[in-house]
Amino acid sequence: CQQQSHVAIGGPSPMLQLSAADMEAWAVKLATVNRAEGVVGFTKMLIGAIRQVVDGFSPTGASMDRVAALVWRLAAGQIHDVTTPGAGRQFAPSYLEGLLPSAPFHAPAAHPWLAPLARRAGAIQREMHAQAVEGLWAPASKAACQKMFAPEWRIVSLVTSGIWVQGGRFPETRAALESASSQGLRAFEVLLARMPARTSIGSHSDNMNYVLTAHVGLELEEGSCELTVGEHAHGWREGEALVFDTSYMHSAVNRSGRDRYVLVIRFWHPSVSEEERFAFLFLQQVMAQMKAHGQAEVLFQAKHETHGPHAAGPGGPPR
Image (tube, rainbow, N blue to C red; front, side, top):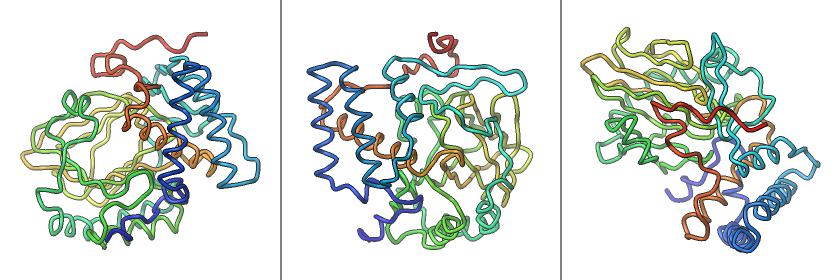
Protein backbone atom coordinates (compact mmCIF):
# COMPACT_ATOMS: atom_id res chain seq x y z
CA CYS A 1 0.00 0.00 0.00
CA GLN A 2 2.89 2.33 0.62
CA GLN A 3 3.80 2.30 -3.06
CA GLN A 4 0.18 2.88 -4.08
CA SER A 5 -0.11 5.86 -1.74
CA HIS A 6 2.57 7.79 -3.64
CA VAL A 7 0.77 8.17 -6.95
CA ALA A 8 0.17 11.58 -8.51
CA ILE A 9 -3.47 12.26 -9.35
CA GLY A 10 -2.93 15.94 -10.15
CA GLY A 11 0.10 15.79 -12.45
CA PRO A 12 3.88 15.80 -11.74
CA SER A 13 4.70 16.80 -8.18
CA PRO A 14 7.85 18.02 -6.41
CA MET A 15 6.86 15.61 -3.64
CA LEU A 16 7.78 12.77 -6.02
CA GLN A 17 10.53 14.43 -8.07
CA LEU A 18 12.52 15.88 -5.15
CA SER A 19 13.86 13.67 -2.38
CA ALA A 20 13.18 14.32 1.29
CA ALA A 21 16.86 15.28 1.61
CA ASP A 22 16.48 17.85 -1.19
CA MET A 23 13.46 19.43 0.48
CA GLU A 24 15.21 19.43 3.85
CA ALA A 25 18.27 21.11 2.32
CA TRP A 26 16.13 23.90 0.83
CA ALA A 27 14.35 24.38 4.15
CA VAL A 28 17.64 24.67 6.05
CA LYS A 29 19.07 27.17 3.53
CA LEU A 30 15.95 29.32 3.65
CA ALA A 31 15.76 29.22 7.45
CA THR A 32 19.42 30.28 7.68
CA VAL A 33 18.88 33.24 5.35
CA ASN A 34 15.70 34.21 7.19
CA ARG A 35 17.60 34.41 10.48
CA ALA A 36 20.55 36.27 8.98
CA GLU A 37 18.87 38.66 6.54
CA GLY A 38 15.22 38.86 7.53
CA VAL A 39 12.15 38.66 5.34
CA VAL A 40 13.62 40.52 2.34
CA GLY A 41 16.62 38.23 1.99
CA PHE A 42 14.44 35.22 2.71
CA THR A 43 11.93 36.22 0.03
CA LYS A 44 14.65 36.78 -2.59
CA MET A 45 16.12 33.36 -1.90
CA LEU A 46 12.69 31.70 -1.87
CA ILE A 47 11.86 33.11 -5.31
CA GLY A 48 15.27 31.96 -6.56
CA ALA A 49 14.62 28.48 -5.18
CA ILE A 50 11.24 28.36 -6.90
CA ARG A 51 12.79 29.33 -10.23
CA GLN A 52 15.54 26.71 -9.88
CA VAL A 53 13.15 23.90 -8.95
CA VAL A 54 10.70 24.79 -11.73
CA ASP A 55 13.53 24.91 -14.29
CA GLY A 56 14.42 21.36 -13.25
CA PHE A 57 10.81 20.31 -13.84
CA SER A 58 10.30 22.22 -17.10
CA PRO A 59 13.49 23.75 -18.58
CA THR A 60 11.55 25.96 -21.00
CA GLY A 61 12.14 29.27 -19.25
CA ALA A 62 8.45 29.60 -18.36
CA SER A 63 7.64 32.87 -16.63
CA MET A 64 7.43 32.83 -12.85
CA ASP A 65 6.59 36.54 -12.71
CA ARG A 66 3.07 36.05 -11.34
CA VAL A 67 4.30 33.67 -8.66
CA ALA A 68 7.16 36.03 -7.70
CA ALA A 69 4.73 38.96 -7.44
CA LEU A 70 2.46 36.87 -5.22
CA VAL A 71 5.33 35.93 -2.90
CA TRP A 72 6.44 39.57 -2.58
CA ARG A 73 2.86 40.60 -1.68
CA LEU A 74 2.76 37.88 0.96
CA ALA A 75 6.07 39.10 2.37
CA ALA A 76 4.72 42.66 2.53
CA GLY A 77 1.48 41.56 4.18
CA GLN A 78 -0.62 42.81 1.27
CA ILE A 79 -4.02 41.16 1.04
CA HIS A 80 -6.44 41.10 -1.88
CA ASP A 81 -9.69 42.10 -0.18
CA VAL A 82 -12.27 43.33 -2.70
CA THR A 83 -16.05 43.45 -2.57
CA THR A 84 -17.72 43.53 -5.97
CA PRO A 85 -21.45 44.28 -6.27
CA GLY A 86 -23.23 41.25 -7.64
CA ALA A 87 -20.37 38.92 -6.71
CA GLY A 88 -19.44 39.54 -3.09
CA ARG A 89 -16.31 39.77 -1.00
CA GLN A 90 -13.15 38.07 -2.25
CA PHE A 91 -10.46 37.69 0.42
CA ALA A 92 -7.16 36.18 -0.72
CA PRO A 93 -3.83 36.77 1.02
CA SER A 94 -2.40 34.36 -1.59
CA TYR A 95 -3.67 36.00 -4.78
CA LEU A 96 -2.48 35.17 -8.29
CA GLU A 97 -3.21 37.95 -10.74
CA GLY A 98 -4.89 37.51 -14.11
CA LEU A 99 -6.97 34.39 -13.46
CA LEU A 100 -10.10 34.30 -15.62
CA PRO A 101 -12.89 33.59 -15.15
CA SER A 102 -13.13 35.05 -11.65
CA ALA A 103 -16.56 34.57 -10.07
CA PRO A 104 -18.13 33.01 -6.96
CA PHE A 105 -19.62 30.10 -8.93
CA HIS A 106 -18.23 28.61 -12.15
CA ALA A 107 -20.03 26.61 -14.83
CA PRO A 108 -19.48 22.86 -14.24
CA ALA A 109 -19.67 22.31 -18.01
CA ALA A 110 -16.43 24.31 -18.40
CA HIS A 111 -14.61 21.33 -16.82
CA PRO A 112 -15.20 18.30 -19.10
CA TRP A 113 -13.84 15.79 -16.57
CA LEU A 114 -16.51 16.68 -14.01
CA ALA A 115 -19.72 15.28 -15.54
CA PRO A 116 -18.32 11.73 -15.98
CA LEU A 117 -17.05 11.86 -12.40
CA ALA A 118 -20.45 13.00 -11.11
CA ARG A 119 -22.11 10.11 -12.93
CA ARG A 120 -20.13 7.76 -10.69
CA ALA A 121 -21.51 9.39 -7.52
CA GLY A 122 -23.63 6.36 -6.66
CA ALA A 123 -20.67 3.98 -6.74
CA ILE A 124 -18.53 6.43 -4.75
CA GLN A 125 -21.30 6.81 -2.16
CA ARG A 126 -21.65 3.04 -1.73
CA GLU A 127 -17.89 2.60 -1.41
CA MET A 128 -17.75 5.44 1.11
CA HIS A 129 -20.24 3.69 3.41
CA ALA A 130 -18.52 0.33 2.94
CA GLN A 131 -14.96 1.49 3.62
CA ALA A 132 -15.02 4.82 5.47
CA VAL A 133 -15.18 3.37 8.97
CA GLU A 134 -15.73 5.86 11.75
CA GLY A 135 -12.04 5.95 12.65
CA LEU A 136 -11.18 7.36 9.23
CA TRP A 137 -13.38 10.43 9.64
CA ALA A 138 -11.34 13.26 11.13
CA PRO A 139 -11.85 16.95 11.95
CA ALA A 140 -10.66 19.54 9.45
CA SER A 141 -6.89 19.98 9.58
CA LYS A 142 -6.90 23.70 10.34
CA ALA A 143 -7.68 23.30 14.00
CA ALA A 144 -8.25 26.96 14.84
CA CYS A 145 -10.58 27.58 11.92
CA GLN A 146 -12.27 24.22 12.38
CA LYS A 147 -13.14 25.11 15.96
CA MET A 148 -14.71 28.42 14.96
CA PHE A 149 -16.39 27.49 11.71
CA ALA A 150 -17.50 23.87 11.86
CA PRO A 151 -16.57 21.79 14.90
CA GLU A 152 -18.85 18.95 13.73
CA TRP A 153 -17.53 18.77 10.15
CA ARG A 154 -15.62 15.55 9.35
CA ILE A 155 -13.51 14.52 6.36
CA VAL A 156 -11.67 11.56 4.87
CA SER A 157 -8.64 12.76 2.89
CA LEU A 158 -8.09 10.95 -0.40
CA VAL A 159 -5.66 13.21 -2.27
CA THR A 160 -3.26 15.69 -0.65
CA SER A 161 -1.12 18.07 -2.73
CA GLY A 162 -1.97 16.01 -5.80
CA ILE A 163 -0.90 12.68 -4.22
CA TRP A 164 -3.25 9.75 -3.48
CA VAL A 165 -2.94 9.05 0.27
CA GLN A 166 -5.35 6.17 0.94
CA GLY A 167 -3.22 3.29 -0.31
CA GLY A 168 -5.44 0.41 -1.44
CA ARG A 169 -8.64 1.79 0.09
CA PHE A 170 -11.46 3.25 -2.04
CA PRO A 171 -10.39 1.65 -5.36
CA GLU A 172 -13.61 2.68 -7.15
CA THR A 173 -13.14 6.30 -6.14
CA ARG A 174 -9.48 6.23 -7.06
CA ALA A 175 -10.31 4.78 -10.49
CA ALA A 176 -12.89 7.53 -11.02
CA LEU A 177 -10.34 10.20 -10.13
CA GLU A 178 -7.66 8.67 -12.35
CA SER A 179 -10.14 8.65 -15.22
CA ALA A 180 -10.97 12.30 -14.51
CA SER A 181 -7.25 13.09 -14.43
CA SER A 182 -6.88 11.58 -17.91
CA GLN A 183 -9.63 13.97 -19.04
CA GLY A 184 -7.96 17.09 -17.62
CA LEU A 185 -8.48 17.11 -13.85
CA ARG A 186 -5.47 18.61 -12.05
CA ALA A 187 -6.35 17.73 -8.47
CA PHE A 188 -4.82 19.57 -5.54
CA GLU A 189 -6.88 17.94 -2.81
CA VAL A 190 -9.77 15.46 -2.76
CA LEU A 191 -11.78 14.40 0.25
CA LEU A 192 -15.06 12.94 1.39
CA ALA A 193 -16.92 15.44 3.57
CA ARG A 194 -19.66 14.78 6.12
CA MET A 195 -21.78 17.65 7.45
CA PRO A 196 -24.03 16.44 10.28
CA ALA A 197 -27.71 17.21 10.54
CA ARG A 198 -28.72 20.70 11.67
CA THR A 199 -25.21 22.17 11.53
CA SER A 200 -23.63 25.06 9.66
CA ILE A 201 -20.25 26.34 8.49
CA GLY A 202 -19.61 30.02 9.15
CA SER A 203 -18.55 32.48 6.46
CA HIS A 204 -14.84 32.24 5.66
CA SER A 205 -12.27 32.31 2.87
CA ASP A 206 -9.75 29.62 1.97
CA ASN A 207 -7.28 32.45 1.23
CA MET A 208 -6.14 31.52 -2.30
CA ASN A 209 -7.72 32.13 -5.71
CA TYR A 210 -5.71 29.72 -7.85
CA VAL A 211 -7.44 26.57 -6.57
CA LEU A 212 -11.13 26.06 -7.36
CA THR A 213 -13.48 23.63 -5.62
CA ALA A 214 -16.03 21.19 -7.00
CA HIS A 215 -18.61 19.42 -4.83
CA VAL A 216 -20.34 16.28 -6.09
CA GLY A 217 -23.46 15.48 -4.07
CA LEU A 218 -23.32 11.93 -2.70
CA GLU A 219 -26.07 11.75 -0.09
CA LEU A 220 -28.25 14.55 1.29
CA GLU A 221 -31.77 15.88 1.69
CA GLU A 222 -32.28 18.10 -1.33
CA GLY A 223 -33.87 21.45 -0.56
CA SER A 224 -32.48 21.51 2.99
CA CYS A 225 -28.74 21.86 2.28
CA GLU A 226 -27.35 25.10 0.85
CA LEU A 227 -23.99 26.59 -0.10
CA THR A 228 -23.56 30.39 -0.22
CA VAL A 229 -20.56 31.87 -2.05
CA GLY A 230 -20.27 35.63 -2.18
CA GLU A 231 -23.76 36.92 -2.91
CA HIS A 232 -25.04 33.71 -4.51
CA ALA A 233 -26.54 30.54 -3.03
CA HIS A 234 -27.12 27.08 -4.51
CA GLY A 235 -28.40 23.82 -3.08
CA TRP A 236 -26.61 20.51 -3.51
CA ARG A 237 -28.24 17.69 -5.46
CA GLU A 238 -27.24 14.04 -5.43
CA GLY A 239 -25.20 13.09 -8.47
CA GLU A 240 -24.71 16.69 -9.55
CA ALA A 241 -21.77 19.07 -9.21
CA LEU A 242 -21.17 22.63 -8.09
CA VAL A 243 -17.96 24.53 -8.88
CA PHE A 244 -16.98 27.59 -6.88
CA ASP A 245 -14.09 29.83 -5.86
CA THR A 246 -13.38 29.55 -2.14
CA SER A 247 -11.42 32.81 -2.08
CA TYR A 248 -14.90 34.38 -1.98
CA MET A 249 -16.41 34.37 1.48
CA HIS A 250 -18.54 31.25 1.67
CA SER A 251 -20.72 29.38 4.14
CA ALA A 252 -22.95 26.32 4.26
CA VAL A 253 -25.94 24.99 6.14
CA ASN A 254 -27.58 21.59 6.57
CA ARG A 255 -31.09 22.19 7.90
CA SER A 256 -32.15 18.58 7.45
CA GLY A 257 -32.36 15.78 9.97
CA ARG A 258 -29.64 13.67 8.34
CA ASP A 259 -25.99 13.97 7.39
CA ARG A 260 -24.91 15.59 4.12
CA TYR A 261 -22.14 13.81 2.21
CA VAL A 262 -20.23 15.31 -0.72
CA LEU A 263 -17.08 14.50 -2.64
CA VAL A 264 -14.86 17.59 -2.51
CA ILE A 265 -12.39 18.10 -5.37
CA ARG A 266 -10.06 21.08 -5.04
CA PHE A 267 -8.34 21.60 -8.38
CA TRP A 268 -6.04 24.09 -10.05
CA HIS A 269 -7.68 27.02 -11.80
CA PRO A 270 -7.51 26.44 -15.59
CA SER A 271 -5.53 29.68 -16.01
CA VAL A 272 -2.69 28.39 -13.79
CA SER A 273 0.19 27.06 -15.90
CA GLU A 274 1.80 23.70 -15.20
CA GLU A 275 4.98 25.50 -14.12
CA GLU A 276 3.03 27.71 -11.70
CA ARG A 277 1.24 24.67 -10.29
CA PHE A 278 4.58 22.96 -9.68
CA ALA A 279 5.93 26.15 -8.08
CA PHE A 280 3.03 26.40 -5.64
CA LEU A 281 3.40 22.77 -4.61
CA PHE A 282 7.09 23.31 -3.94
CA LEU A 283 6.34 26.51 -1.99
CA GLN A 284 3.77 24.68 0.13
CA GLN A 285 6.07 21.79 0.88
CA VAL A 286 9.21 23.76 1.69
CA MET A 287 7.30 26.09 4.03
CA ALA A 288 5.71 23.10 5.76
CA GLN A 289 9.16 21.55 6.17
CA MET A 290 10.51 24.71 7.79
CA LYS A 291 7.62 24.95 10.22
CA ALA A 292 7.65 21.24 11.08
CA HIS A 293 11.28 21.46 12.18
CA GLY A 294 10.86 24.74 14.04
CA GLN A 295 13.34 26.40 11.71
CA ALA A 296 11.29 29.55 11.20
CA GLU A 297 8.35 31.45 12.55
CA VAL A 298 5.02 30.95 10.79
CA LEU A 299 5.52 33.12 7.73
CA PHE A 300 3.10 34.57 5.21
CA GLN A 301 0.02 33.79 7.30
CA ALA A 302 -2.88 36.21 7.63
CA LYS A 303 -4.30 36.43 11.12
CA HIS A 304 -7.58 34.63 11.68
CA GLU A 305 -9.20 37.90 12.76
CA THR A 306 -8.79 39.24 9.21
CA HIS A 307 -10.89 36.53 7.60
CA GLY A 308 -13.11 35.00 10.27
CA PRO A 309 -16.91 35.04 10.18
CA HIS A 310 -17.08 38.51 11.75
CA ALA A 311 -14.07 40.02 10.01
CA ALA A 312 -14.13 43.66 9.06
CA GLY A 313 -11.22 43.14 6.68
CA PRO A 314 -7.91 45.01 6.47
CA GLY A 315 -9.12 47.29 3.68
CA GLY A 316 -7.06 45.80 0.89
CA PRO A 317 -3.39 45.99 -0.02
CA PRO A 318 -1.46 49.20 0.52
CA ARG A 319 -0.92 51.29 -2.58
